[in-house]
Amino acid sequence: MKLKLHHVNLATENVDRMNAFYTRVLGLGTCTEDLPVLEKNRGYAGDVAFVSDGAIQFHLAEKDIQAGFRAKQFVNPVSHGHIAYRTDDIEAFIKHLEDNGIPYADWRNQAVNGWRQIFFYDPDGNVIEVHEVEEV
Image (cartoon, rainbow, N blue to C red; front, side):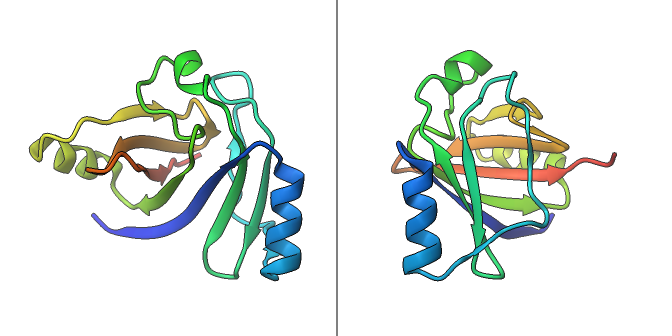
């Protein structure tokens, strides 16, 4: 099971302001490839801007403190943001978490069509996502 940093999600009250900051001040470009297809009717319906430094994506997501409740998940990845890793074997990673006694929320594809996503907390309460792109 291989993990690779895929994106950093920053939760914001104002997506346009954050997008302007990251593109103008930091010089990041608008991301157009390998973007998630949001499932706006299944848990998270916020706006998101996608920017990149050419290697790592930044998902500038509208803060939504109710997304976890709507999706019936105990981890809310868009209340304060998260870091995300892509894996080539989500089932092996889930087993790894279970073997280590780490609880996780299995969002499956409730937020992103075509991505199997799980979320869990690090020891200080930061949210971590691990996802695998599903075969279509």
